[in-house]
Length: 360
Ligand code: HEM
Image (tube, rainbow, N blue to C red):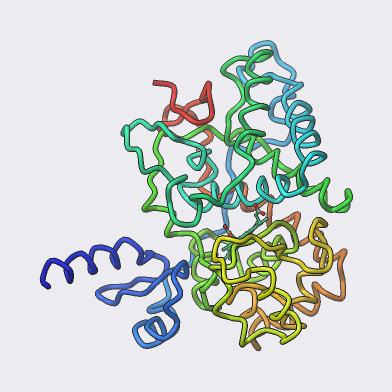
């Protein structure tokens, strides 16, 4: 009995995210469905943490690899074009990969900053439980092969020059451009270095599908992104797919016809994937906000955006698509500035040769 209890405490401690856990109170960070327990234990989200300052992105430069100097170590004018080509090819074959690339960028930047730690399978610490094994990522993230393909093509022309972290950022920018039918054009600077560590446990900094508004705001403010950015970025749930395990408990709370359709698609299988946006599943557009208003979204974390605190912003995004597109561009650029390493080995960082493993 004591062993079982101890095991439970360890499991709870592992799953409890720092973003939603203060002092001795244990709260869940939203990847598990425990709404009652969470409400009882956490009362909102615990004591709010001090918001992080907006990410400065100091050291990042637009057109970083185009810098025309023979002494520049980062000169590789073809780099961004190679990434664009790889993304265009992948998205032409499967638009879902574009969604995967946008999400990959989010999951990279929220854990250890945008340093491609999300791609590692072999690290400096030689641990096998890297971010890829974390609950939000395992059997879920996609698009790795596009990054690897772009990296290999870039290494062939400019060895040891272009970071995997920059490739992830450029790929997210390009996927957004293509999936929005060229309406969303993110100004994405380069100059990030790649990290050498990656730990599955740290993925608890990512908000989960069962998060409430306070938890969502807390995890975004911890990264220096405000509520407007959080709401603008959630619009990415107008593309790609999600597994039934993350929303089947919400059927009774959804629009009845929408819930009935989803129930049929899931057919009792937690691992079935369904489109996130039932209207325009492959287009990065403002439809997500209409779906929030209509109660036709999948996750708790989507549905809570219709709360009094956030509904005004949701309605603005639904009614003024161009304004949302600019907000999305700005928020993606700022996300790309989170905790970046831009002075290489002084920060224990490097330009990886292969994106899935550290250099040695
Ligand atoms: C606000 C908090 C967020 C939560 C709780 C959340 C949670 C999730 C979950 C649970 C899935 C489905 C995963 C699966 O079934 O395996 C998903 C999919 C997705 N998310 Fe989020 N997400 C959030 C924010 C974001 C942001 C900021 C972006 C990007 C800017 C994003 C982009 C996506 C995309 C594109 C997909 C579909 C991926 C695919 O089809 O491969 N999400 N998200």
